[in-house]
Image (tube, rainbow, N blue to C red; front, side, top):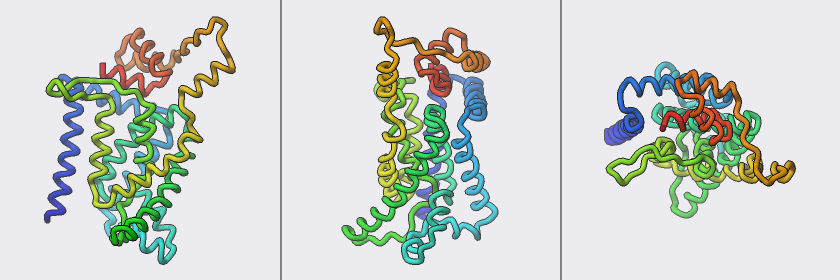
Length: 296
């Protein structure tokens, strides 16, 4: 009973934080509904097919397993003992892909929705290569950390929380380092609320949802090894481009703005001047520009 109560309180806390974040952004219910509709429209018009698939397919399977096919959940449990002793690799694949906890499914889906910006920025092929590499490396780190925990602390861990959590935790590092932080408002005059606060709250909610989920978080950070090889920092990429094509007067060329993206922002109700400014500031990234305009 105590475990169930703690899980319910944890779920209510996550929902409360999500509603609080929406409330500080919207001054009225009508404005909240309008912005929610804009964001919902944006996700279906975004060119991020891999993120959409990771958002919809695992979530649908998780809901079906919870509501209709409970007797099949045992096939998606992340059973390390069966993987190590019986070499049931299929359990590793199933257990590290589908969440059996709806709370973890909800949090990881929202995080994947926010992290789709990397697929739009670098392309689906590179993004899928990173996710596959992070998934494989974090799986190895899972086994290594479990063995280290047993050797140092004498704690035997036979199973871990299931789901596509390793790559999700890995994406927090580029999100922290490469996504600009924009202050939205302040709470009590001291605590700043930024455009990244909800993502960090969801990450904290996910990190505290299970006893051994910290192992998945640490192994996800280990999966970040292949990030810089696949995705060089944008500043270095821009510097390399300028060295290959230096401007005659030493002034970097202005960012070209897509008229199609300007039109899409204007259809949402923003002025042309604001749309142009936001797209130039976000390096022609529609997702970042939209978030910036919605928060100002």
